View 1 (tube, one colour):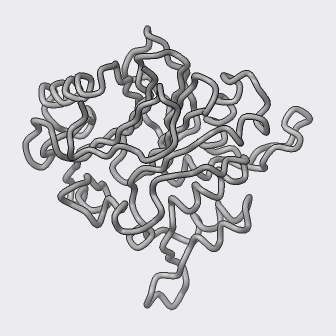
View 2: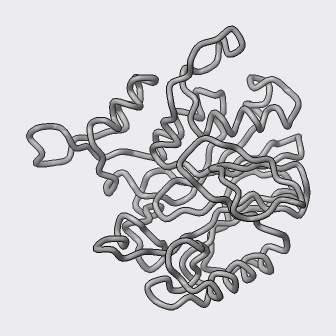
Length: 280
């Protein structure tokens, strides 16, 4: 049974699909990683991280597979032989009893499920992975979106696993956006705004000038809003979870969430939370 301090996504998932988002509560790590740190790369005790991962595994009743996330667009298909630490920023599986897992501490976790097909996926979407490099047009990708970030890459693999064209899979796909740095806290440079606008002009509405900055070089970015735009462009309209309000902001809720932007200053570090989706 999940810890009552953790979040259970409210989305119309099929009966056999389960999901959870851990918070900073429920583990054994000592400050500043107190207590449910799942990241093995942040300076926490190896024993504490192992104990916390075991707590998660026992709570969900299946194996979570932890990735080495690099803010890229690599997608890994998981099997029961998959091991922790493989480099990717998203994963998917058709196998039961195996949890697609991504870790975050400000970046946006995105979970996917199909209403008919037995496939689930999880993606780690920081702004770099979400923006992705512009797609080079070829005959093979004619008619596809002109960008190829982590959500596009994940959905491409997701649709292939469902053995159908993307435009047929999208209407039956649901997505859940977890907590992340919110639009009142995520200050970015003009180059970030330009990277999104270059391939999706409507993305400009997701950036607001920082008050008091007369030179207009700093903006507040709406990360979940940007993700919704990208998912909509793929034809995915059933999107749940993070609506950009402070309740979902990792920076604004220090007792509930870890935040790299808030805590990892002056050489300090912070823990990592996990978003998991699996089939029983």
